[in-house]
Image 1: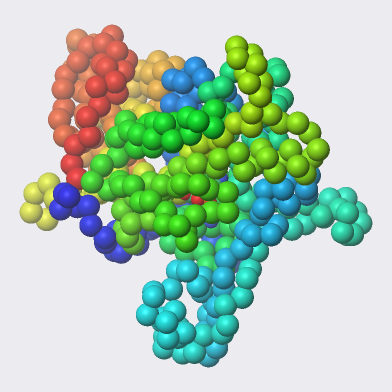
Image 2: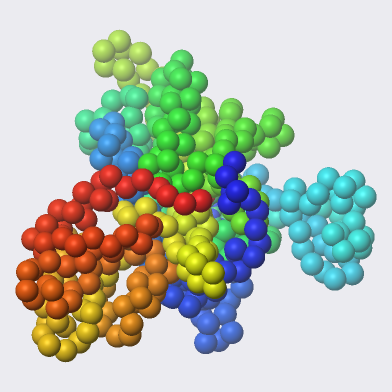
Length: 450
Ligand code: GAP
């Protein structure tokens, strides 16, 4: 493991502060004092989140011709959640410190506290109580039992109830997958660690439908695909590992499950789950809806309920993962430390910063024209204020991989300086080659640093 791949709570404070200062993430309804554990994504944060989503979507749909997309509604028929088992068993055990009234998830307390039934502060704990995590609301003006709806606690069910629609309307044949990105809601007992665990979050889920005899083969395939995807995203693989669920940890629907964990500044935590959900969901939806959800293998005439291999990653949690992984304080020289976010160039909110060395003598106009050209292909940012070194450092801090400086020599020979974030190397190149050079660098990107 590299020296940097360690737990460091201070890093978390630095990331939270950077996120607020530079417009990645703001506290929700800040001007009213905020809402506990709810967060808004600012101009840079929404770009980062969208790029992570796009990266995932491309990996799943564009690069796998056996996967199609879907976007289902957040609110679904309430019977969905009875069939899925969430009404009955999507609950955590909650305990309360009887002195301070602080609440804890029973399964998150250290074994020693559970054995002695004391809180981390040493006070007696209340008896564990079941707490269903689903948000309940009412559809329409009358609040009666028949109008109850839930905010979905996972996006997966929207895929299961549409599986027949997709089979009938697309040309997919088993094995195939359906991918979806969207909001999910859980009334978490304890939300903490910034955007890591929140009540409103986004998931990137893919459900892969297979013949029951092939579930283990595909489970293994998707485990490998998903871990390799983090390498392609430029994540430090010293900070990524698998963790298998023990028999007492398995969700009510799972035959086997592995988490992909990431070493966050506060320790190893789940980033994504890979689950073998068997035919649990389709069987239950068949029973509860009375609809036949079996699949007919047209080549053999065999009819069966497919098994489902699920890959389920948190999008908002991935934003924190990418930020934690990219954040670095690098000592350049004695007394000179820069903060740099070493994002993969495809994830960086801004790809190219464009600066005139000075505003006068026509350099600003020249730089503006170059920026307008680059804007057709890349996310750009134009800045003409302050010392050039400071402008570079401001871009380092938000992870901009390329900066272009226009100076007096540009007027003479149509060349500019291309400055690289990671190595801080500066190269002189013709304006005409700028786009191609940046595109090439993105393609050949190799992670450097911790
Ligand atoms: N459909 C399966 C499912 O939802 P999960 O392990 O409960 O499985 C999958 O959730 C992923 O969703 C997690 O690995 C995590 O990244 C994200 N996630 C779950 N609860 C979350 C929360 N309260 N806040 C942020 N992300 C969450």
